Amino acid sequence: MCQRVAKLQALEASLTRLQRACDGEHPVQECGILAALSDTDIA
Image 1: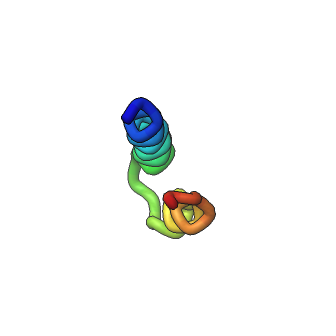
Image 2: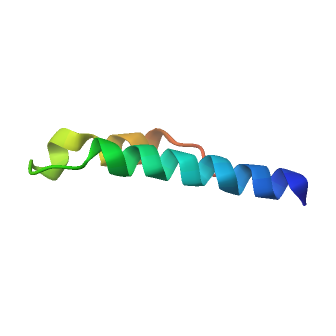
């Protein structure tokens, strides 16, 4: 159970970083969120 919570907390931190990286007005392609998500191991 503790490992699952730790994985969820790590996922939350990653998503928060991605959200901050994509703040502002620019095309989605420039923020890199899709590339970062495709490189993330969520298994």
